[in-house]
Length: 408
Image (cartoon, rainbow, N blue to C red; front, side, top):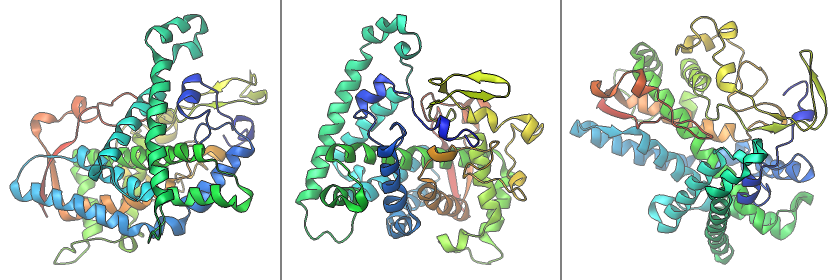
C-alpha cells in the first residue's frame, strides 16, 4: 500500500455494492479515477478539514453533555448502565447533526434512516457467494440477496431524497451542515467539481457510517480494555485529573491535546481492535511482483489489519495484551505511514475522516475517565464475554458493555 499504492488503489466491482451504493458513486467503494479524486477532494478539503471539524465543536460538546448527564444519573442511582447503547447514541447523534442538521433520536424519519443504514451495513459486510464462487450464484438468488439489496437501496434513497428536499426548501439557515455544502457543489459546480444530486445521498452515507462505526467501536473497546486493566485506568485518571484537589467538571479539547498517555491508550485500543479488521478490499490494476510472487492484475487484495497489529514479530510476545506504554516512545501513528500499524488503512485509500473521529474520541474518553470510576458486573465478565466480537464489516462487541459508574 506504499510501494505499490497506485497499482492497488482500485476497488473490486461487487454486484451487491453497486446495487446498494448507486454504482459505487461515493468515496469508499468508488473505482479509482477522476470521479473518485474529485469526491475525495470534496470530503478532505471541504467537509472534513481541520477548520470544519473545529466548527462542529459545539455540537460535540452538547451531545457529550447529554451523555454525561445520563452517566451521572446512573452513578447517583447506583444502577447498571448500558454504555454501548449510550456511545452509539452519542456518535450517531453527532454524525446526524453534522450531516443533516438534526439528530435521529428526535425524529421518526431519522430513526428510520438509522434502520436502513444498519441493513446496508449488514449487506455490505455479508458474503456474496457468487462473487467468489460463480458456479454457486444460485445460493445468492435463493436467499434473495440482490432483491434485498435493491429494496434497501430504494428505501434509503427515498429517505435521503426527503432530507435533500428539506434542505433545498429551507431558507436563512444559521449554520451549514454537510448536505448544504454538497448541494452548493451541485448548484455551482465549484472548483470544477461536479456533484450530482444522486451522489449526495451516498457520500453522506459514507460520512455517517464512518462517523458512527469508527468512533463507537474505538470508544467501546477502549473503555472495555481500561475497565479490564485497572492499572491502566489509574494511570490515565492520574494524567487527566492531575494534581488538582478538586476535580474539574469538564476537560476541553485544548486540555487533552498534550496528554501523552491518553493518546497512547487510544492507539493501543486501535491496535487491538481496528474498526475494520480486514480493511476494505482493493483491486490490482497492474501485475505486481511481491516478495518473489507474481500477482496478476485483477486480483482482489484483502489486508488483515487485525493480524498485522497483533504480530508477535513486530509487537513482541505480549502482542495480545493491552499495554498502552508501548506507544509512549514510539514514532508510529495511525496515518498509515507504517505497515505494522494501519487501523485506518494506508495510501490513497486511507480513511479521510481520522481527524473527525479523533476530535470526538479524545475528549469523550477523557471526560468519562475523569468524572467517574468504573466497574463491570462480576457475573458479566471474563474474556468470553468482555472480548467476544460481533460479525460484520466493522467489529463491535458481541454483547453490550454493562457497567456501574460511580463519582470520582
